[in-house]
Image (cartoon, rainbow, N blue to C red):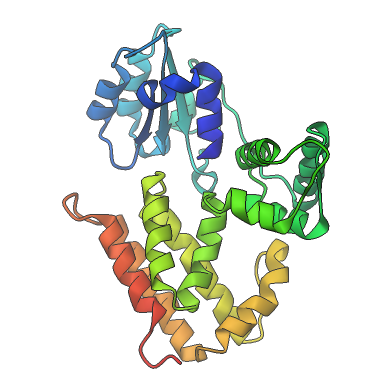
Length: 301
């Protein structure tokens, strides 16, 4: 999300982002509606920037219609097509065959933990700022290797502090508390802590920022899978998050292994329900209902 906004900002002045920047969900937008959106002329200025997520959802014939609309290229229309890492198409897929003549293909691999930390220190040094060890560790985990997030969060911190100052853990929490990746990973903590108000606030904020219900549910599911694993003495699958094992172990004490297993299955069932949800049903209602059920699962505590 942050990377998309950053990219749009390279083509549009800040004052035009609200009017000339459109984010279109490919999962919930038909090809005809997408083409209609892409045909809109700029309201202000010279350019209109579109970000189309999950472009891999469209059929070959739909992609051909989209490609026809974009031919020849219009310098006043900037279109960014996105596919999630888990659904990256192969080089011989129809999406590449149809769109490759018109677009530049760019793959963003996540930074490692060490690369993230080094870039944080380096970018802050250019702004004449330092960062203490606890703040660096927290910020590294919150950014989770995301290029766009790194740039956005560093810019916020650089604007928040004066040259020569040192960024603390409190600064990181204050300035990056709204960042989506941290919220997604942290929402599991709020659920297990029984903080219903914070859970609902976080869910509604993330949905308003354009995150899909299934992507939010994925992180909730990962949290409870981690609780289940440590409860049963198993290692976490993600080596980068082994440092959270003690935290997960503490949270898991409030549940039996059977309860955690039922929760994981309940989350899987909800994910399946969200993926076949009728258009008139709001996914946020399903997600909020599940979250409230997980806060006080039957028989827990």
